[in-house]
Amino acid sequence: MSFILTFLLMFAFWMLLSGHFDFILVTLGVISSLLVAYWSHDLIFGKVNFGQGLMRILRLIRYLPWLLWQIVLANFHLVYLTLHPKMPIEPAFLTIKTDFKTDMGVAIFANSITLTPGTVTLEAGRKQFVVHAISKYTAEGLLSGDMEARVKEIEGQ
Amino acid sequence: MEIKTIITAILLAVGCFFMVVAAIGVVRFPDFFARLHPCGKGDTLGQALVILGLMVYEGFTLVSVKLLIIMLFIFLANPTSAHFIAKAGYVAGVKSVDEELEEECAHASSLACGSSTDKKVSGVDSAS
Image (cartoon, rainbow over all chains, first blue to last red; front, side):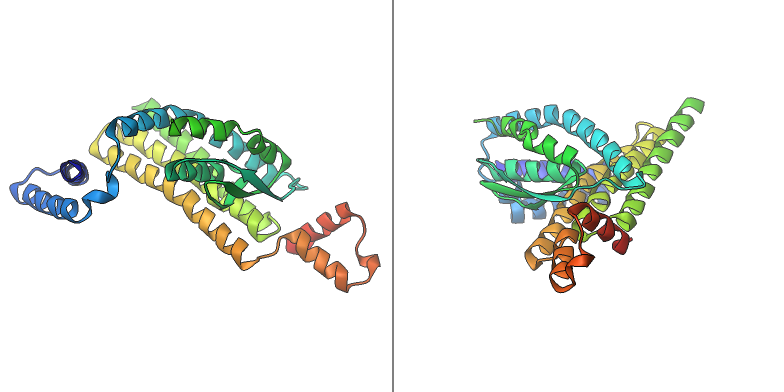
């Protein structure tokens, strides 16, 4: 099952990138997709429960617009900090206690923290995050736990 | 056609603005960790807007789909690399501005170090 899915995904990606439908190119695409699927079909799909995976992808898509809006807002804050003559920054290290159940949740949360300007993830783990915040405004936004709750919602049960 | 070109121009200009500000931020901020902030994500939004502008210019073709894939890749890769640079600095014990000042104060006479606000201002000055 994972073999067929990986093959289809790789072949679709090949066709997307090449855009040509010559016999020789399509044949080469089939061969290389088969090779990739044979060697690494357990990497992408593995033992994933497909229904759960699909629900997670749908919830992730619902999360993205909110994240993009936060990125834009926080980027304007960073522009303000950079161009302000006195540069009103207050760097601080924060420790956040979390309890994520999946590595996917940890990865999404860590990348979201780094993407919203003003906070960079230093250490990521299921139990604890160490974060560097550049100003009080961004630190408060993170400590309110809004983002964490949203990422946990993606994880589901 | 005209409107498309105008939207493209606006998106490219705003994207370039964010990238320039990120570059200024890297120069202006006082220490290692603060500098990671602009270079880790001012760039991310900047490149996203530039690529979005190119996609609008190109219309709905195979090229714009490829541009979208590039954009998504940078959205994943840029924060990850910033995180690992930060982690490397944290593990190796790179000092932030406040810590450096405290060490200097421990060696220098007490007159050199005033209140905490003075410390911050002098730290910014010495770095910039």
